Amino acid sequence: MTKNVIAFQGEPGAYSHQACRFYRPGMEVLPCRTFEDTIDAVRQGRAELAMLPVENSTYGRVADIHHLLPESGLHIIDEGFVRVRIALLGVPGAKISDVTDAMSHPVLLGQCRGFMREHGIRGIVGADTAGSALEVAKRAEPALAALASPLAGEIYGLDVLASGIEDRQNNTTRFLIMSREPDFSRRANAQGGQTMMTTFVFRVRNIPAALYKALGGFATNGINMTKLESYMVDGIFTATQFYADIEGHPEDPSVALALAELGYFTESLEILGVYPADPLRAEQRGGQTA
Image (cartoon, rainbow, N blue to C red; front, side, top):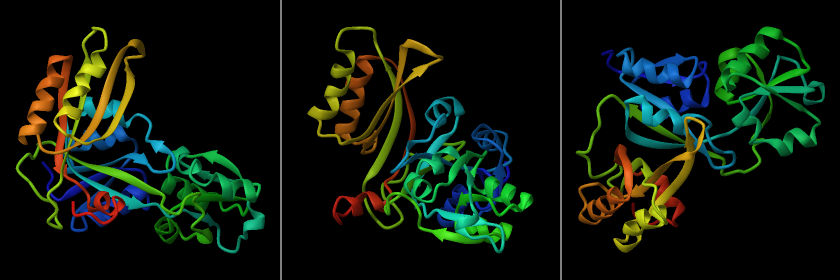
């Protein structure tokens, strides 16, 4: 396996690239065309880790990721939150008044609707944020801009026509760092906080009130469930899989009891990762120690 390489989806300058530089600054980066390619890079040994975005505080969850994670064969070993600062990038010499169209990934287009509407700019879907910046640089048309990170502007020689244009000033994307091997050994994050996170997927048995009964163990054992999402499996309306994040480690007595009760009411249960909570979680709770 190639050591000290972290793969991400997109071109250099993507927000995933920015996340790699922040959370794994000593690692070489490997840009990949799709999320599937990013996962395959780790599975095939061309990279040690993968950086994958899972949700954004403004736009919501990143499409397809929740479907890909359970089938990836990879394990979550860390999470990270990146503040997304969106810039309108144009060719050198262009002005905002010149721009009629802005290209970007659909997730980013959904994060600055107010600015686009105010300036009468039409959104155009691109493969990814940095790839859109590269395309704008290639086409060199003043009427076409990109919505991307300032880092992408530096890399591709574009001017920042406007910055901080996201609809919400706390606009943040959550990333998961994935590895071929799980790591259940840690009990603290880099800052010394003690909160651990456990992520898992499950399918409930076909019995009345199965979901209600399955989740009851988390309430009775005092486990904080920070995320619960459902999605169809293989396009079948009656086959529903649930994705969940909880605070705690599977070896904690209370978590072990809750997972045991969950297992009784489910036909499948798979832990995708156990990892330290990012310090931002504590900050958002009002400065409590994680």
